[in-house]
Image (cartoon, rainbow, N blue to C red; front, side, top):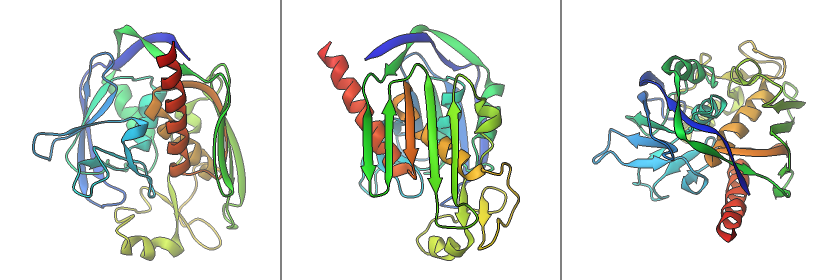
Length: 288
């Protein structure tokens, strides 16, 4: 079911940013524009003919290979936008329901590898209330997905909470656990600064696959065999970043009330859960 929350919001004024895309390595410009109620988050490819628009929704996801990508279809020549999860998490944290994101390349700027630069940029834009209430999807019975040793379940909960267990067979990461509750924790201080990470031993293989071409010590934590190459912002920065990714991917459904418990999940499973939530709640709303 869904309930009406506070009024929907958009940004007060346009803001823009530039930077390097993590996977393509290309320079990218993005501009955030205010949007009316019930618009949602819409990416607009201003570098392509007719400026095609792609709405950030679970069923628009076309790839989860090392990031979350949305597109008009999975066809190779169809317009897409890659690596939207950090930006989406920042919009969610500021409770921005409606915005147009103009972008002149197929991938967002990675910034410093976290959501913090986007959060600060959007705060500078200001927040403006609109006239319609926000729709909050309420989980009233468990919804879960599982694949091998990875699983996710969302349970009924008065608020939004994520309990994440990260388990890597690598001495630098090992097993980490962290919990984020929107009503009790600060996204800006505890989750937003956590950066994406990768392994030094995988860099060459990723480059051969056309991935992480824009990665550097300025926008990612690089993990060696014995330690990180660059210093951490938190002792458990890896699991905090995983929670950041979950938030960004769950934001494809807007705002959901529930408690997510997850073990070792990545973008593919996040999106699968987002789609299952969407399927269940949309079907329920249509029966009412």
